[in-house]
Image (tube, rainbow, N blue to C red):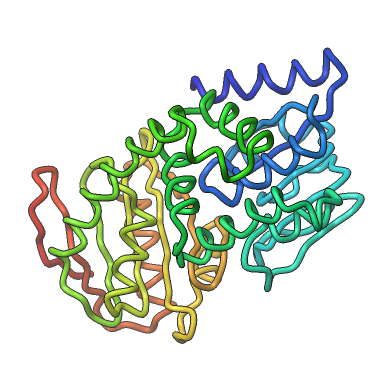
Length: 315
């Protein structure tokens, strides 16, 4: 609710004061990088963060005229859009779209005419590391954590800092404070991942949201040998959030499964949000689809109860 209010305030500010509006993905550093590049190009511009689900559900976002949209589905009225999701349909006046690009920021730097700008290039390099789950630099590690540890107004400030200082922003006390929040989440996620047995297909269903990084959990399980991962987490009153993951060279396609549920993403990482009453119907819909598409006689999954205990179950 609070995020929606911040989003509305940003949009109205841009309209009232006639400033360029930029819309970026709220979920990861690739979206943050796109926002920072937008601020480098348009210092007076207003950055707004949203998720694909927000675009689908918000009439205001779809009604607004955007100067730039990065790492998100096209909301409708857009001059420039930079993206790399195979499930997102282009619609902007000027599209910089390539589903083979390793990050949306790779397209954004071209879209905003910042190619050759060393500060911008370093930001894009970090975005590629984070979006391909191949973090090797300390800057990418800190900026990824800071983005995920930030609340909405802090994300706006982080985008402004990145636009001003580039990756040198990692030395800022504010950025380190944000990153430290997420490092604790990472640690708890890694501890849980070690308890989960690995097989070709690993499906984990949570009874409640335990506050870890579910996308990171999926990445860890893939790294340990699972070719396909699915993490299901209750969200909202009647919803279930699905995190799909697949090894790049495996026969599994996360984007195909997510798209069938109204979501999207990439072959190696995708997501969807399904609502139903009661919530169990949403859970059964997702599991049923996966069972059918993977042609399984029996779908085995791991259930994590509210006390954190693991139970083997099947459908």
